[in-house]
Image (cartoon, rainbow, N blue to C red):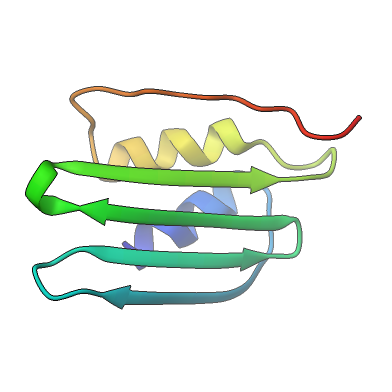
Length: 89
């Protein structure tokens, strides 16, 4: 997951400040990338075959959709539910 997240951060034009992750008993994972432009996080539930990613960027030089495409290359999904939320002006 660390490789996927770092590649996604680079692809979207953001700058990584720090990456942290925690693996739970049973294999679930929470990972967080603090970015100069906000954050990228993931929570996984392997027993459900489910992962939730939050790609939150700001500024004119970042594109969260490029990050999403990189993540999909690392973890090809069977189904995607995408919510694109514009915050602020």
